[in-house]
Length: 221
Image (cartoon, rainbow, N blue to C red; front, top):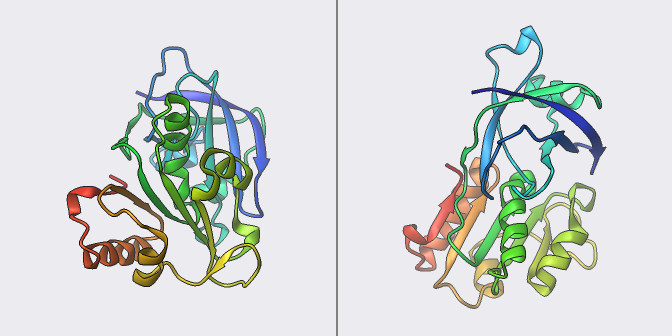
């Protein structure tokens, strides 16, 4: 089933990351961690769909999407970035991208953090966050978004890493086996991974080397 929803607000969070606040269709229910397929209300995109995670919570009056634009790909994200308030998306029914497996370690590369936003917000709302930790890796400081909110939710358990820029108070370097062993003290909990394919594969291999069983690791479905 498709839902036609209007853009109520469009905000550039960084030079290439956009927050869209959208109308919420009547009767549209979902849970944190779910995603939808998105297309544009334009005949040129009739059969062109792309998956995006819902970053809002079901209790919210509106839907929220946080989307990175890739102009070089000249595809869906570029087309979405050119839309304005009053334009429309078409979305499908929601489906599971990540499931809440309880408190754990969230490891994100760039906009791979977007599937974790609603999960962390919902855990905070429900009081189930526990000692969850977010390791958020970006190339440069200018790529970071929602920094203040992640800090409010997680406090000292929000770890920011830059891979191409040495700048305080951020950590510098790649998230590798040594980094994980230094910054994670308890490994008998769930791990959530999202980001570029190479990033997720590398982190997954490091976790296996550190003795983490595959059933304790979630990646986007």
